[in-house]
Length: 513
RNA sequence: CGGGGAGUAGCGCAGCCUGGUAGCGCAUCUGCUUUGGGAGCAGAGGGUCGCAAGUUCGAAUCUUGUCUCCCCGACCA
Image (cartoon, rainbow, N blue to C red; front, side, top):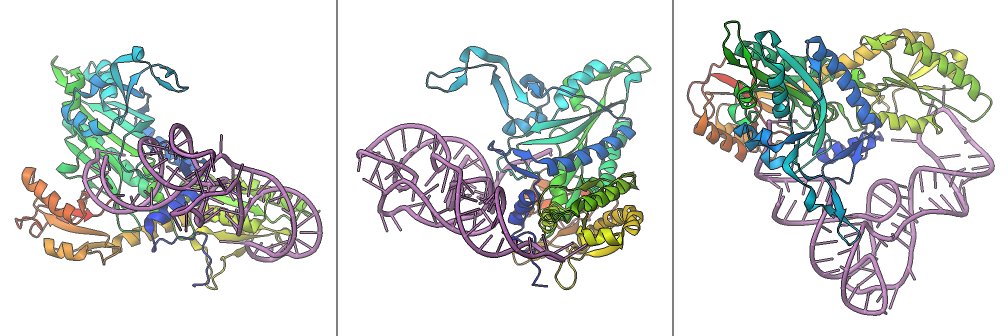
């Protein structure tokens, strides 16, 4: 085993943070941009995002939600209409104050004082306010409801500490915004979006998640209820991978989103918002990556199968390439995971054995290396990314007849997809601990010696206000946070870990990103 | 935003303390030999040392400022 020469030099177990960065760069997903906290997303990383976008967009539209696009700039005054909302975001907003530059006389440029904006524009950190203003125009009658909109956009939050894909200053996301006649309708939509995210994470990203409600202290600024999906990373930390908010009527009140009901009265709308971002890619890395780099679930792999011809710069190359092209065309006609198979014939110069490791680091599900002998015998030499190493410590190549491989390719890709989910699910389940009943026992469990503690499910009495603040402080001392209250948990049957009062529900407690 | 570390060739680094106009490995290019599994030998190209001021005859090296990245903390939908 120790003879294995891994494709990365840093291992997960040695330094998870460094390993994460190595995957991002070695898989050629993204790089630094020179702009604080902002990244350049390279073709492989962006290709994964495009797959996520495409499949998520399909689900959004299937729910009757329509795409729109709203401005990047939001007048500052829009924010001041909702007090909690502005408090939540004030500290991290980029502000545009001028619209022209002039020479500073020293060869540089400075904002022209003459060109100061009357009202500063905020670069959107999220679009509730500007979309709310539009909704106020679009909704007049009960017949206009529900109003179901979504936008794919970039947003900016001036975070103090950034990490590629997980928390960048600018990030890409989708934000759904809906308006409804009643609280019940809005809650149904909030939970529909949550369930959409849960299903997407598991079926598409092969990333098991816990869907649940966030505690009061973790709510979106201005929301009445916030729900999240939480995924467990391989270091045992939790990643909030998507959120859905029931906003009540406070945003409707701030923006004036009202409708006339069937009795002729004016009513405030109940609104929701929900989003997932490029952070999902960080989740995929930390769920599926290994000591050889990324592993991309087939559903979101820009290329699912890469063919590497073993060219020798001689007369045989033409026939070999023709053989590979024929195979590529055949595979591209197949359907796997309900879409045409995405197969690349990599004709770039270089030895197949070298290019193989680039694709391993990128995490392509299947690599086919094909040489002259394969062409003569009608075979392919296959390497599965999820079964990379043979017991002898060498790459685990498997030989198939060309026809045999083609006929199996769709089911193979589907098996890799479900296998990755099963593996991640098992790892998550064995790293959830139950039965810890006191704060001391919790502290004991999360000692520094326990390198991969995972999550703990505890029971609590759901304190609010100052009592909740105290709980949050106690957890903070242990570097812990409440992740969420899982939707489908067993009913509580014990006492509160924090207060000793009878417990009312179960919550997950963990370290988090 | 506080504490610590770092920015020198595409990538990874040495040189800096004790100023004298730049070096190693990988990658790249050329040639030859190899080649069914991350090739070998020989040769070559490539850097205003993050940026800006200052000290100096002279700055990668010393001083100050600034930008960016990494780690820890605070913050964080």
